[in-house]
Amino acid sequence: MDESKDLLKLQCSVMNYDWGLQGRDSNVARLFSLNSRSQFDLDKPYAEFWMGTHDSGPSFLHDSSQSLTLKSWVSQNPHVLGDNVLHKWGSDLPFLFKVLSVGKALSIQAHPDKDLARTLHKLHPDLYKDENHKPEMALAMTQFEALCGFITLKELKAVLHTVPEVSELIGAENANLVLQTSDQDSEEKLKSVLKAVFTLLMSANKDRITDAVNRLKFRLHKESEMRQLTDKEQLVLQLEKQYPADVGVIAAFFLNLVKLNPGEALFLGPNEPHAYLSGECVECMATSDNVVRAGLTPKHIDVQTLCSMLTYNQGSPEILRGAPLNPYVNRYIPPFEEFEIDHCVLPQGETVVFPAIPGPSIFLVTVGEGTMNTTGSPKGQLVTEGDVLFAAANTEISVTSNASKLHLYRTGTNSRFFQVS
Image (tube, rainbow, N blue to C red; front, top):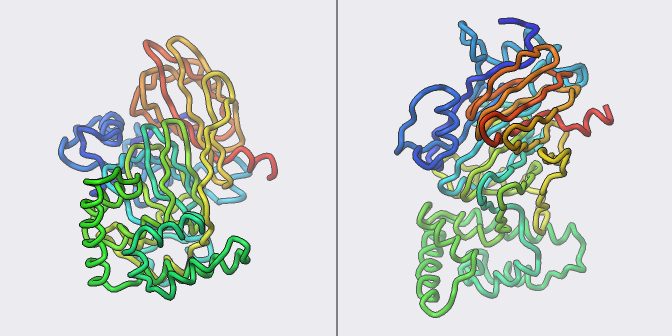
């Protein structure tokens, strides 16, 4: 492998989790097939396409005869990260890039902060594979829905008035505690009350949850004959079909239902509850796979850890719509040092330049074909959909679309990190 090469084509990994869209409908399946030059199974779920250095889903150098991983190559050539990234995060990429194709709801989950991640990894290394936190951002490629963060106190009071199954599970005394709480109370008290009732709900025994979910389902089906159900009510019926008798069906009433249009993004800090519901997105995060789950999943759940770690912040999450860098590129900058995402839509025959930056980047081509040039390689490299490329720090890259419109995404270390480091 030419160690001076500053634009490397990668062969990347796929995850076939059962919540993924079936191959015939999945962008993940399409991109993985194009990237690996292999067939995909039309009826198998394809959930996540991973681009980066995480051991659970490594990327390999495309033209390496020794199946060399990107992680190994970067550790052998740490200068490609740039001095700032190397000093802050060591000889590894600080970010992990993915495409997600969501066919049914993911678990209600949160990702630990760094201190908790270290503790969980030490106690349960089989469940929590690394010591890192996992802030993340999802940028919608299609219509995309998620549950994210807790609803406001006003909205929670409305739930207690209109969803009797919630009040029955947490008990009249605790329901009254919420109803008697005011926005004028201290933030600490609001969070304490929310934590108490949410923990009670999530900890309820299986028989009570099964009974409550069944009664909820029966009531909503009956009421749907007389009125239009709300979006949240329709969602919980859908969740019940996917995960019968699961506490997550009722927990959904506590969380914001967020609907993203293509080109809108949602960022999630550590210790914030969320569950992706449907649609396709590109996602970037710190290099970690730590997930604490408590509902809507057949996987291991850890209710006690989840309920104790959450921030219990309330209110709708911020939606990012990106800031234009030029006519063709929109940049999405979350409040995390590790990453940002650029989305480029380049009309036929046009050229755009990605200026040299002090950190590494990964490019993903999702539509069309074009040519990528670096200053050190004027000949250029033909790129087409499914191609993933690693760009070394301090590399200026120009991209020209060829026969049709070209769509690509770039992720790299947050540009604000370099302004302060």
